[in-house]
Length: 190
Image 1 (cartoon, rainbow, N blue to C red):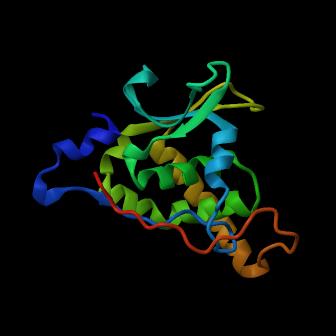
Image 2: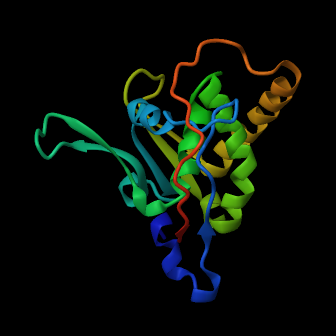
Image 3: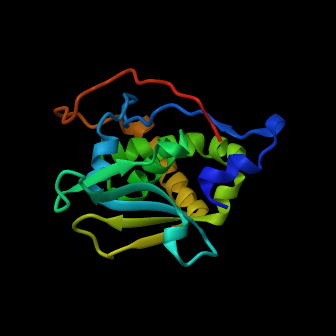
């Protein structure tokens, strides 16, 4: 069963609802560049059942497709059908694939904070893999990792980040991205 179709199996009394805030950077402000960063870093992100070899049967999160105006130009798209799950998956991919930095460290803390909410609303995700296809420089041409395994790795990393943040604080330096304190809060039922 696809992630986007999980709601069709739920009864009207037992609809899974996932409502989580937008991801933030290490210092707590909204990560306004996360979506653009991931669209540049990955040509495709897909959630696919662990038992399924064919990733085309999965649910796409980010995909690059030819532009309608010029087929030679690739346009990145985000799947709006998966609601707030997109926020968690983007933070997870960012935290898992990035090194140290305001965005990656913030995404790690975000994943650790909201993992239980995600699993409570969508426990089926433990049976899925996160499939990443880098858009540029990377070691492997594609990565496939169990969703729960990726979350566990990021949560473990977040403990080190939280301890370091508490003890040493945020590194001083110039802001590289625009700050934003607000973002639309949308509740989507699955």
